[in-house]
Length: 294
Ligand code: MN
Ligand code: MN
Image (cartoon, rainbow, N blue to C red; front, top):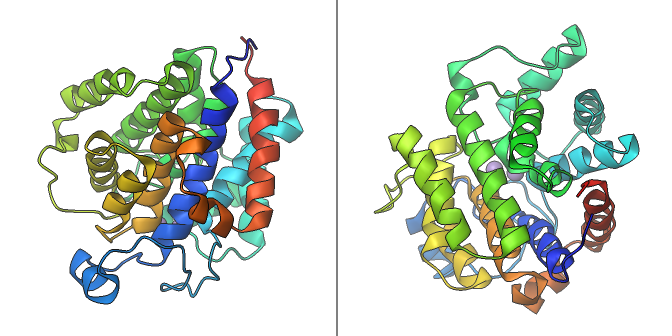
């Protein structure tokens, strides 16, 4: 595809931003904002720990599933829903440090039935499909319509829920516009459209929940993204809400990284990220962009 000069910087920003949000947020996952303040005042360093007892800079299922999805697309030389499901199976069998309930159920369902789409279930309204979708954006820059169709295909391997679908598509389209146009204004319309269709996503003022329910996750991510002026400010605002902080951090990092680019990510965070993850992200980002046909 025709590469504009900033595309690689923004795409790397989005992918590294996602991993950094995961690594930063995991420390305070499932804590309340009050507990975070009592312990850290402001949590703004990648120090590991948290309920998973992570090494500093290590990531969780959010980044791992994203990399699994990306590696499936690279190995397939393009879009391949079954290869994605197989990559999720391999990942789950490797005993990941963490895995969400819907992801475990959906992947187990695929193992036993070969079915690439789970049935609708009310409890599938979690953020697990949205959190891993970045590689889909990187291989689908040529068309928003194509991006939405593919996003829902990968989502439905584990999550089949109208709110998860709407949010996964909206976050994908926002990231795509940021990568191509680099303007926050390009995202406003997508957020407005999402809220017009599903008013439950309203995030002004922030409604006060940062859980793994996709509605709470999106509200927390949008509140951070639209109300701050830098990558650091956005991530710090989001993860200090606690709750599902590694996943809100990952999604906020994806959007903010796409807007501000690698240049906008604090060096102290880039240096702290697990070097194996950094290396995988550099390789995948350029290979995935090469799969976008434009
Ligand atoms: Mn996680
Ligand atoms: Mn999480």
